[in-house]
Image 1 (cartoon, rainbow, N blue to C red):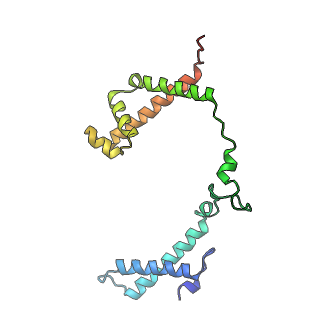
Image 2: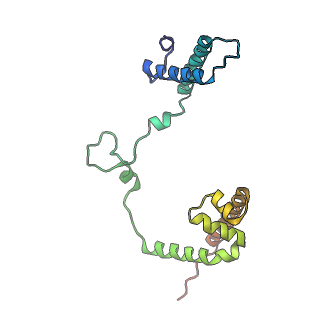
Image 3: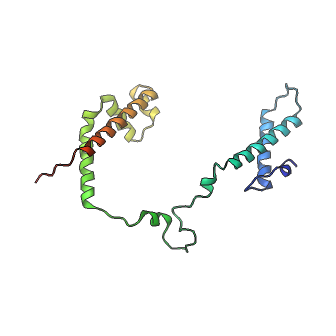
Length: 177
């Protein structure tokens, strides 16, 4: 009965009924007999509020981007099955530039060899554990510290490595012949 007095754009009456049932569940869960209201009035209020909240949320269009999104792993709209996916179309041809790969490898070596000079002992240990997939909590427990200290150490690591990489970009490569 309540659902018929509301309108949910992009939805139907059954959607509103579901929201109403969630409101009813909340009323059953939260009703207190020591209050002055009857269960019927309390349930009606919970159901109405839940439906209105759903309508307001729908009107904000928060999920519009997700609802209108196009999958990168499916063919573009209007294409037939078996054609290139959106990912293939966007990515373009893949090129492996041996020179770029060599430079990237050298940059990585330079970074790895500079880490002991850049980072403190704590920062090095935190980074090593983080790169092994440990959570902040696990790292803190292992080092006998707290998560805030781990977070601060990782922030310093990111800043120091970022500074190092920016400095490397400014210094031209020397070609030895």
